[in-house]
Length: 435
Ligand code: LLP
Image (tube, rainbow, N blue to C red; front, side, top):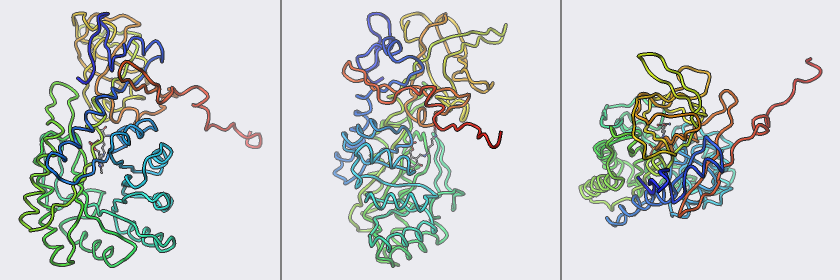
């Protein structure tokens, strides 16, 4: 997919760059991002709204993969940005991201984080709970500021891949309950306080979702409430944010919709509901993370040792693992892989790919078809662009790999590999006194 192809040397090429060359230049493991594919995904989401003439903001959920260069790319493509911590916010501001297009999420934003967001003048804070209303109100008074907010609701729709469940009340740590009066109490507070400019409401129903029904249902549940809010408070939202969660194809078993299809279903639902209530169509905001960067990322590893368990399986070990991709260990997530230096070789055996961490659970792929491998071969694991680098860690004091962007035949290092010195930079020696 994307700009990936097999070149005449039989190597995997991404963005016009030979991955064997990338491995030689930057070492392995290394994350490679197909920038053209990220741009394409961004445009697909934006275009879907433009086609329907609906005002919208597409905010990249930066938790999926955040870095200065990524944020600059997101800005270039005219998207907004969803951040969930001071660290993500700081990175965005340092990348020169327009504060007015940053949205701040989280179920326990600290006073420091809120202050930082307000001082930067970010576009919107997605308020999650009563404690936060209280904190923002206090800060807003001190700084004589009006803060634009959305109120996050839990709509009682929880979606995952093909399944969704709807409940009267969702058991979630996020947001105000839609069903038991919580959201109305919150609304009453913020509408009565001139520190707040209430733009509308937000919900996020899940991740890696393969159909549009859950989003439609969430929109319908919210609009039922909008009818009540109109009557009780004379308030109609100018923004309805339906979150992220659009699925991607990790393996051939996954069947996500086209990015635009999710959006089209949302738009039709919002249009129909607005018509019923005889109100203007609100702006629709979305927050895709995975679907913007997931399939644009490929991790390259070098194959090292092997172990054969007779009659059971062959383990092939690579020079990374759960330190650069924790998703298989954490969620039993599945991926596909290929030998990047020998793409034309025939797959002849079933093997399992082990990481190098001291933990039996550090397996990247189970039972995949590969050609006969030898040490030094280059393994490409696909679709690692979301929640790979962003969830990478230093378990076993393994240094985090670099990130390389490729586009139009050029490779650019955007995050360098951690060095031994980086690994020690927070360490302080035992003090002489204690010793
Ligand atoms: N908006 C909100 C409020 C969210 O909580 C999330 C993800 C997103 C947007 C973006 O969702 P996406 O489009 O990326 O599915 N670490 C897990 C995923 C956790 C998602 C958390 N929230 C994984 O690796 O699958």
